[in-house]
Length: 192
Image (cartoon, one colour):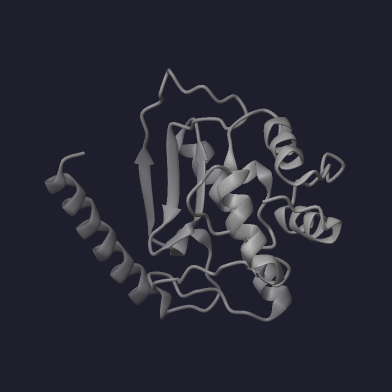
């Protein structure tokens, strides 16, 4: 997409967000249709090597709330997925007493807790470099090995973890990084 087209899309999204914000003042119980939506069509890469993560032709996101999105092979599939995610978020917010963001407003990104990762911050940095083979990554208590590759299984990273730290983590079915870090830290077999 050319820069001029990108600016036009951004302008339209901005105007649509302002309009939806104005309309939201007229009611209190918002549905997905009350939010400004941005539809994107993606090119499918025929050379994509992964099989676990599917490429989708369409994505639909709520403008100014980009983590609230859906994807699919058609616009309708993407909208249906977004509708499910929106309904789940609305139910969760009602349960916890947090209001839904007003349509058209900017919704800041909420980071997951690092309560379990932080006590092992040096180990986490070492793990990121030596096992994930990255210079830097942000990980939370909800991060898993699955977040860092597109393979069909975690074997390569589990094997690398055992090579680097001498710790078998293959029984941690969730592949949760906070659990893996806790196991490595408790093993006292950290090799530098």
